Image (cartoon, rainbow, N blue to C red):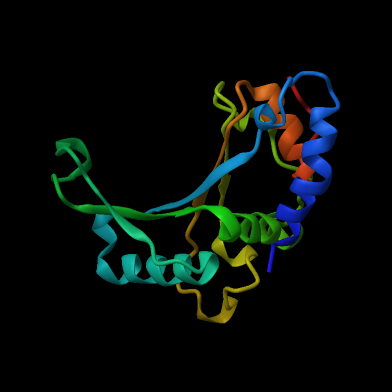
Length: 182
């Protein structure tokens, strides 16, 4: 079964962006390449907090996260090389579209006093990052079982060459930007 947003991209968004006369070939039209979801966890908090973060990340994304290890020691942060500093999941193809659909349609509107996402999260190369303060905005998470609120970073990697093309692509997908574009 093809996810709703993937079908929308193939039938509507790609042809609409192609009609802007910016792209000579249908394969030059930007698309979403992958979505990376990352949770940072301080090593000082212990393995129980890391286990809760792994469980929540697995519930939210449907994939088992990989652990991030510190590459170098930093004395000021009491961080040693090889310590676990968080977890991440890379989503591609159908699971990527399903996660993006849940993020746009159900999770982001559940943020308290939500007025849109800032469009300042572009990196200059067509990738967009947004920080989420609380994992309980996802309907898969049972709020009663959450011991500690944990934030996460969601990075949407696109094949767009610049931020303006990536902004148009994500806007067509229904990303609720706040309207303050530069």
